[in-house]
Amino acid sequence: MRNAARVSDPVGDLLSAVVATASAVRGGGPVQPPTLERPSKPDFGDYSTNVAMLLAPGMGQPPRAIAERIAEGLGERLGNDLGRAEVAGPGFLNLFMSDAWCCRSLAGTLEAGDAYGAGDRSGAQRINVEFVSANPTGPVTVASGRHAAYGDSLCRILEFAGNDVDREYYVNDRGGQIERFVASIRARGQGEDPPEDGYQGAYVVEVAQRLPGAAEIDGEKLARRAVEIMLEEVRETLARFRVHMDRFSSEEALHDSGAVAEVLDRLEEREHVYPLDGAVWLRTTSFGDDKDRVLMRSNGELTYFGSDIAYHEDKRARGYDRVIAVWGADHHGYVARMRAAWEALGGDPEQLELLIMQLVSLIEGGQRAQMSKRGGEFVTLDDLVEDIGVDATRWFLLQRSHDTPLDLDLDLARRRSQDNPVYYAQYAHARIASILRRAGEERVTRALAADVAGSAEELHRSARSLVKRLLEFPEEVTEAAERRAPHRLTTYVTEVAQDFSAFYRDCKVVGAAEEGGDEDLRIATCESTRRVIARSLDLLGLAAPAEM
Image (cartoon, rainbow, N blue to C red):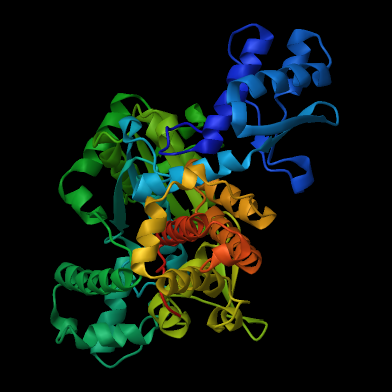
């Protein structure tokens, strides 16, 4: 369902024509949005719609009869664009588009240039996306790397869909984990083992070496310097992974500024908090949570929840249209209470999205690696990138929905073969670049300036299939943005690569005239495919190589 206008969207225009025709057949008024899908078999048409079955209950007529009337109306509305329409089954309407429509649609993708598939910015939203936000007590792990790949790709897609996006990293630079980190650094600085509940990794030794005399440094000062060191490494790791943050927000700064105390006072003024057994509780059950939550323990210590409420209120006060946070799997039970706190402070619950990222496991030789930052038994994102490369790392971390556990097959990710999906997609781009180089820059320029829309070539089935796949790109961007689903683009770009392989097998490009083909059209098809693959890879944060 397209909510934003797109530059050159023939399939969207076709859907609009179906809706307009259906409305006319019914006698006016809005029509329930129908589907417009590509049938699994070309014999069933280029597109199929259920619009007649949606109209039937209200019109009191058989769906097939309504479909016949819509087919007639579409023929008049679309003219030569519609080859024919057939009624199938209980009332599906199968549409067979003409070669002329395919050629003109292809030309539209080229004319749109870099804007093909982009959203209309007149409806832009200001969106904040907080992701990664790993505790600054160790290097970025593979688990946090999944957050980084997902969050960055989501931001790219949201921006391409026409929104203004702020990328944010929340630094938990106070509390128990920082105290344990500091204690671990002190111990290593004295040549001792960290406390049993401290951090055991070798990186703690390296931090201690960068802080000579750690045992004598004031606790707060040592904590600040240690966090600075870890954040410096985080920034470097993320930069290597092609991820940048617009903002790093500090938990400690919220306390120092008085923002946390102010939020607690506001909650008390609104009568959402109450004392019980010496502790202070937030009445989250008033907003759908299954039980009330502690804000301040009986010993006067503020819970992490209290700080987090202040952080989300700070984001809300910045005036975003939507606030998205990507949390780890261990935060699943935290969602309801944060939504409750957001609403308790006057926030619109529709503005807040809390997405839970499931775990990632590394698989090598059929064995699963166990990872624990505190225990020092983990694989860093840098290690994984060094092993399989940035492109493979991002692809494999993105290829499944964020709410699904992910097994990353290292043996497959290392392969430089067609079995490796990232290699397969990138190789398709490189192959097209090679074809265009063989044709020559001048020849490609002439082809793109030619009247591709008016080509008289009778399209091969594989050519039609490829063009239709390219026309799906705007909708894929829309769906990936609205569903917060970058993984859709890994599937889509693989399908584009597969369709191109079939096209290139069946249709000669350079020298097409030798077999009676339109070389301008085929070169244009290659260039449109190259652009769509390049854009899809870019939205995933991957390179589109010209040679491999």
